[in-house]
Length: 294
Image 1 (cartoon, helix red, strand yellow):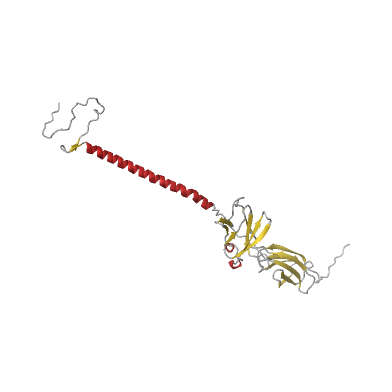
Image 2: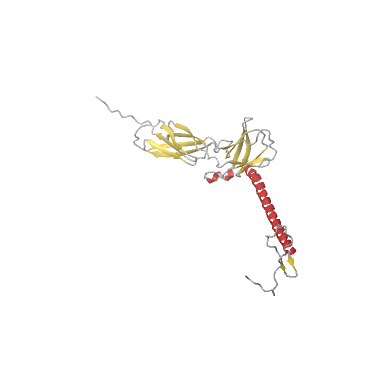
């Protein structure tokens, strides 16, 4: 034997199984079930969203007959904290939960450039990838000294760079850059972190410390200068040698020039070094002497 029993719906019960399905930067998808199975009529829910940072409230109304309800809460702020309450419109018992939206991303391409007596932090604008970020909000910079185990707030800026001075020798630093925190530091962006440990022990931080690009220039420039000097000296030596050879040839030709004949007289080269100095020297032929060829 069996019996079928139909329960009388109780509209004073709270919604069941309230939970978050997905949370983004500016929205959150929540889900719950009706107070009892298979409602036979439309049910009106009140969804109250309390901003725990700004201390404001918003109420949304959802009307449905479904046993399972999915609702998207919009116009939230990145990195915000919210308290969500869902109950029937007749102010029955409530179900509640807390959600935290996704904070803004960390700035990209954070890098350090070393100058004479300070360093410069550079990063890409967060507005390039975050449509919800306005440059007027700015960035805030923190520094952690691992030797002293101290974190310091350096300041904020609306630019994409920041100057840091008075670094101590032998200390390692970690710098973080993030979207500026709002409302007493309760809504912040994700930090981008970079380690800086280029100041060696025993080196005075006030002394100019050139960057890598300066080091390369310090090597390349002297090498190029030496090459240019070497080439210049080589050209001068070649030019002097050429002039010396030219002057020697001119002096040699002038010493063998005969003004009577109007031409230079050279030996054949075969007589050079002979001990017989009495051999007559052929000085050329006159135009009026016939040449006989045997």
